[in-house]
Length: 108
Image (cartoon, rainbow, N blue to C red; front, side):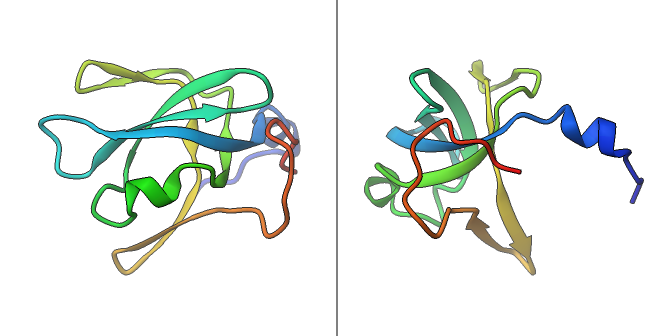
């Protein structure tokens, strides 16, 4: 693992996002396309959670996202933000605030 400086860490723009829409990506077993409100702005995220979460239950959930990550294409679709998750021994858990927070709230 490499160490980053505090200045490098401060470059990350992490926010609370609210999942407003979710759909499976045709041709993928795990990938879903999520539309996420990050504070008055809707961003698209692709995440490999289709086999872990009921997609209907994801709608309306608050999640932590990295907002200023360089966009990346998967299956011909662009992922504009990264949803943060914990991973251990093959188990995945989205990082979800334990209290109601407005979309766009800064994660520090």
